[in-house]
Length: 87
Image (cartoon, rainbow, N blue to C red):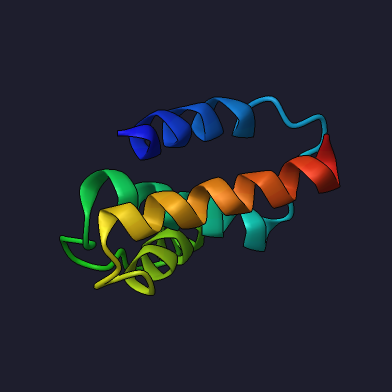
C-alpha cells in the first residue's frame, strides 16, 4: 500500500513548490489528481465564458480510462519533475 502514501506525500509536496508551475503543468496536476481520487470525469462540460473550468474539465476528460493507480503514479512522477524544476 505504498502507492497511496506516496501519492499523499506528492500532494503535500506539490503545495510546497517555491515557484508556480505554468498553466499546462497545473492542468496536468489537476487532471491526474482528479483521476486518481474521483476516477473518470462526470457531469456536463461547463459552458459559456468559464474558460478556467472548461480547461480543467477538458484536462480531466483527457485522462478518462486511466486507472486510479496509474493516475497516482503519473502524479507522483510529475511532482518529482516539478520539484526538480521549481524547488
